[in-house]
Structures are given as C-alpha cells and as structure tokens.
Amino acid sequence: MTSDPNSLSARELARRIKSREMRATTVIRETLDRVARVNPAINAIVQDCADDAMQEAELLDARIEAGDAVGPLAGVPVTIKVISDQAGYATTNGTTLAADLIATQDSPFLRNMRRKGAIVIGRTNTPAFSYRWFTSNKVHGTTLNPHNPALTPGGSSGGAGAATSAGLGHIGHGTDIAGSVRYPAYACGIQGLRPTHGRIPMFNQTGGDRPIGAQLMAVSGPLARRVDDLRLGLEGMAGYSPDDPWSVPMPLRGPDFAKRVALVTHPGGIDTDPRILADLERAAEIFRTAGWTVETPEIPEIREAVDLQIDLWLSDDHEAKLKAARAEDDPGAIALLEHYADRAAAIDKDTFSKLFLRRSALIRDWRAFLEDYPVVLMPVSAELPFRKDEDLEGPATLTRLWNAQLPQIAIPLLGLPAISICSGVENNVPSGVQLVAAPWREDICLTGGEVLEQGFGLPQMTM
Image 1 (cartoon, helix red, strand yellow):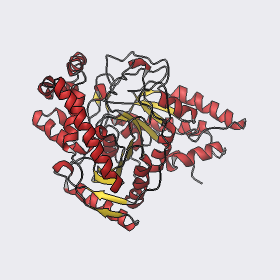
Image 2 (tube, one colour; image 1 turned 60 degrees about the horizontal axis):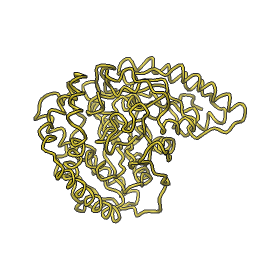
Image 3 (spheres, helix red, strand yellow; image 1 turned 180 degrees about the vertical axis):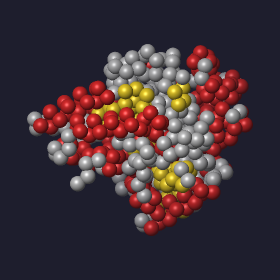
Image 4 (cartoon, helix red, strand yellow; image 1 turned 90 degrees about the vertical axis):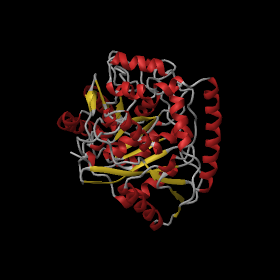
C-alpha cells in the first residue's frame, strides 16, 4: 500500500488518516518537506504556514486517537491565496501597500474548510491587486509555471495553480472574476472549478464591506489534480455565511439532467488554436463514447457579455484603481488600467443602467439555452498558455490577449459555474477545455469533468 500522499486522492488520504492507516503529522511533514525542496524553483507559496500546519496536524491526530469525529477533509493539505483572510497572516493581494494588513480571523470559506479538517500548509501568490493572467508582484516576486518557466502559470491564482501542479498541497484555493481559477488550472495542466456566485462565502474582514480584489462577480473556487478533489474542495469551502451578503444556502446536488452537450469551438468568433480545436473534438468523442449526446447548436450571445463584464469592472472606481496601481508602481496593473482608461471615462449613468438591463437579458437567454443543453463544451482560451509577461508587450498584444480570453470573461457576468479540464501536456505546454452549466449546477460540471478526466487521463504531477 502506497504511503506517498500525492499518489492518493484527497478523499482517500482523509479516509486513511481518519482510520489511522496514516497520521496527519506524517502527511503534513512530508508535504512541507516537498514544499522546501520544490517551491524555491517556482515561488508558488509565498507565505509559510509550516509551524501552524504541524500544530494543527498534531491536534488532529490527538482527536482521532481519542475517537472524536473529524471531517471529510481530515489532514488534507491545502493552500490559500493571499487575497483572502487567514488569521495571523497578511492579506496582501500581491501588493506592498497591504504587506502589513494582518488578518485577525479567517475568511468564512476557510473556517468551513478547517472545521472539516483541512490543514493550510502555505499561502499562494497572485499578481498585484489580482488583476492579471500573469503572476508577479513587488512584495512576493514572480511565480513560474512548473511545466515550462517560459510560460505564465496563469493568474490571478497563478500561485495556487503552480503549487497544486507541483504537488504542494492537494487542493488550492483561488478566486475567479475573469478566469482566475480556470486559467491557472489550464496553464498549469490541472483541473479548476469556478462555482456559482454565492456558493462559497468569501468576505474579508481586512477589506471591510468590499473584499480586496474581489469586486463584482468574483468567487472562490478550488484547483486540484483530480476532479473528485475539486468536488471535495467545493464541499469543504461551501456553506451559508451571514458575513457574505451574497451567500446562498443552496444544495450541492441538483436533479437528474439530460446528458446532452453543446459543442462550441469558436464562441464569439474567436480564432481558436488548432491544438485546442483538436482537444475539443477529442472531448466530444469522449462524451459520445460515454453515452452522451453531442450537438453543435448556435449559442446565445456571448461577446456582448464580455463587453458588459469589462464595463462593469471599469465602472467600479477605475480612477482609484489606477491611482493605487501607480502608487504600487506595478507595471502589469498600470498597463491594464491605462489600456482601458478612455473606456472607463466614457461610462456614464445611462451606460451603467443599460449595462444591467442587457445583462439580465443575456442571463435569461443563457438559462433557457442550458435547459436544452445542460453542458456547454468550449475552449478555456483561444490560445495556448501565454508567454511569461506577454501582457507587457504593448497595447496591441494586450488587446489580442483579452480577446483570446473571451470564454473566461463572459461566464462570470452570466452567473454560471464552469470547470477547466486538462487535456494533456505536449512539449511542456499544457492545454485543456471548459465545461459550463446552469447556475448552482456545479455537480453537472464535475460529472462531465470526470467523464473527460477518464478519457484524457489524470494530470501528471510536475517536478
């Protein structure tokens, strides 16, 4: 019987710890030893939680020895993104401006995870203000992609993606407002789930009423090397919390659904890379072989959803964001915010009002479509993972990158859950596909994701 924690799913690892076949202290010590060996090469974990993690593991083992009931995440090593509160640690959001902003309590999703036995082994990197699909900042440095240092590890949850891909924890916590869970999963060759807004409570005490970097339709979500680990991570993070005004106590599983997939290869007219097109066709065939129906219908409008999402973000005090970016002197944040400065200045009250009217219409259209097609299969991005810091190459490149990310940016505005599934790694370049489902139907995303995982194969741990 294997004793390597990374060879086991999170669920099996927790079962063995609860049954005393393995000890939490041993699992956490081995994981921390791996962090010490591997993390210096990729800089994914930027805040060390080793001492606290070992103390929690010792307490967990003592509880198990005493016969106490423990949760489904018992002893599972996890990482938390530095955008979220963890008592005793700085909620930096990748900025020097918040380098000393020490949390006095855990964010509610983290309280949920800890109640269920998860143990935080470290906190992961994000770009300054969590704005980019690239992960570097002045306070924590640059995170590298474990598969290929010339590529971005994604962002904004790039530290979580790199750490999870490298076996530094079974489940990584990320946040997603425009792909910040799904894209790091895609770029690092693992799996990532963006839940429905309101599923996972994410209020930050250090950020007041509006959590740092978590405006608008941002959600927390898990990254993992296995789809079932995503499921367990979702179960661990989710739960109603009065701290979060958007939190909703919805069941994690819905009614039976038709196994019917809409294959969309060029959503919004994007120029999808040939390798990604081949991955989509492979995914469609995997579904057909598993007994699902795959069709190619016309989908509702999606490009307008991207424009509305961008305008919604720009209307949220863009001038203050740009001022903060300049104070931080972060080139990535400045480049992005200056790129959209004229557009932000043109948004008036009339534009803002129409934005919400159009958003409601698009949401209705998509909900109706998902009644007929419970799963939409589409790209995560039009392009393979971007080069490291490619967004700093000028306005034309930045425009191209944002256009390529249409499948990620549209989904939050529509209020839909989505999952990124790794299709494989070729020549040290990961790729993958995305599944989208109706609101509160993460269970459909996970079920479809497991079908694809069985066909594509489990992502391989790097390093």
